[in-house]
Image (cartoon, rainbow, N blue to C red; front, side):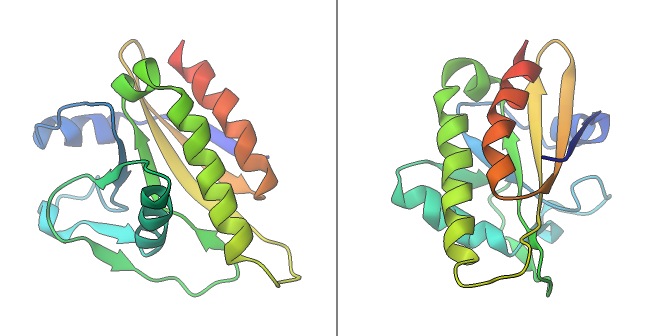
Length: 160
């Protein structure tokens, strides 16, 4: 598993500008959240629609950051570029089992997505964690499907 953790002050500032209120829900964060654009111009990975359907089929709620109709970016690559997930402090502290469930759903989706392919499967996505003590942290994941399950422990460590 290959990942990097960094402090993500830019998203903290942007969420304050949007008057975002943390709650017990998972969110998709747009790729261009730190750019100075109107929320109706936010761009999400095209995979957000498939991931949202996969989560919904298992009664797991995941929402876009704003109520604007999402703009989607398509990438043509053998790699999978996933959406940026935002785990709020409320979710992390009150319903941490949902994190493992969500990561398992992403893994299951990816096994189905890559079914029948023989080349190496490279997965790239980000997770943003809200922590009341340390602010926002961003996990940049770049690895295999199998490594995703290890992210649960990394996320729970960031909760402390």
